[in-house]
Length: 338
Ligand code: ZN
Image (tube, rainbow, N blue to C red; front, side, top):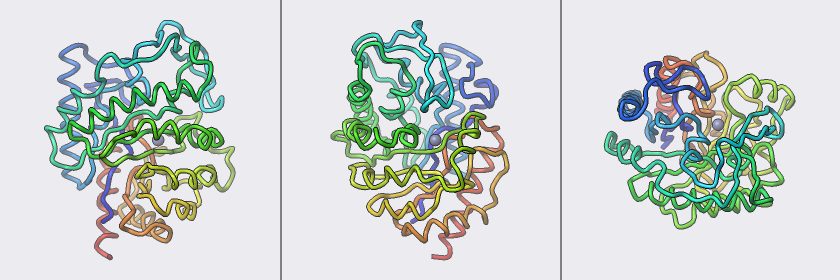
């Protein structure tokens, strides 16, 4: 009960990549880079086990960015044809690569790193992939002409990848869909259908992560416009509860999300964000426990997995290590009361 886990990414040590950046440059290349990534992933797996995280990840040490780490290996994308795009409904403008033909996956993207990661831990292993809607909101389209069509094409590739990763021993496949909090109508119209395509025939646990983003300036400014109560989840949770996705990961710690909205996910396991990623202040175990107890008013302990609000890639390395320790310690405090 109250199995702990993390949303996905963890900071890269400064000897692996530039610290505290969303798009860090690697410190090495080729085989040297690969060995450094493996060493870093192994260290994070060891730390998670030592502090008591139950469902672990490799901290996304093998990819630069949570979306482009997958897309870099997909054919049909022109990386030299950059298109300015106001992503997440114009929250910020980025020069993104462009889809110029039918997309395909010439080879496995993450299989090697998953085999390595699986060999390094006996714990339950989670692996994260970008969700189809979030991919479509992070890349320009000069081929499909419709976002739902492009999303379905990517969902088929994600599904082929996910099936291979599950066969290699991944216990939980999670799709990251921060765009679900922005395009709520689209979620109901085609976002969940695209997720269903991505999880087709998967027999491992499936999850979707929906957050309010990393603690970057653009996100913090956006959050200020959302008012005292962030109710975006309310519009999509009924449809998610009716979906075939097993777990939903959401943001709770230090946010304005009314926890009562979790009552709309009665049939799902819920990863409750109990440590924030927007501040460098490390929550105490007592604070983590308080968030978990508040969530338990709306989710029974059997369905509740204490988690981080979001990925921790851009925060300082030592802060992330301390936050993981508090997360596990806070969950242990509540477990002891049950
Ligand atoms: Zn997130």
